[in-house]
Image 1: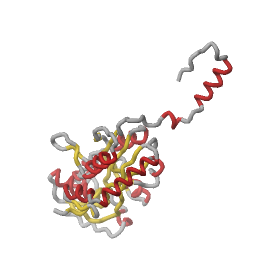
Image 2: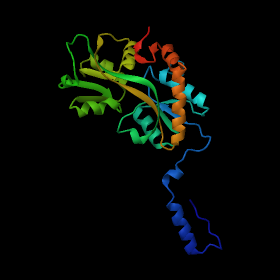
Image 3: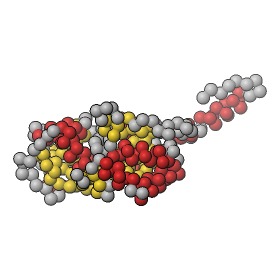
Length: 264
């Protein structure tokens, strides 16, 4: 910011004004602009979000977020599909940005305004059908190499338990790595795992263990006022009461109250 020279402003008073400007909180300079559309970013993680052959962005989470913003009368940009690490960084650093679908955990809690949950994610392990791998607990995973991808929220949880996790740049690489024997297990959301296996036309893989279920959220930059995040969450809760989320899940073949169980 330039402090204009004015004949009536003595040097000492100009210095005082400059010091006052420099002491303004950085957050005050980083507030989102009124009327600026929210920038929506996501990753290619079907069936939550993916780009169809026609180029249109589809998916359970995509449709829920669009409906939420329409009901809230919030202007938004067309959602962008980006690598997870880049999308996460944009939401973290850009005042008018929101990221979906995001697992909420202690490490991320104070980084965003949380809206939701919008859907559920059930973490599971897939393995090759011809291997006799049987699990009844995570302690039995020791000695196996687990495949995941950069930025996956489950990676740190598994490593904290002493498990070996190999991260790919994209999750879509893991089914083939599993078939080729480059990894022993694939940790993935059940809905996404089944979708990717079907889309790639693969066989010989099976789900062998359910780890846990976590809700997923729309994570917005901290520049969003708390009151606005609360308002959007309440609209989302009303959408759930009105069975809107149930209908969106059903349109993709899943149940809203148990979103990893196909209904067809």
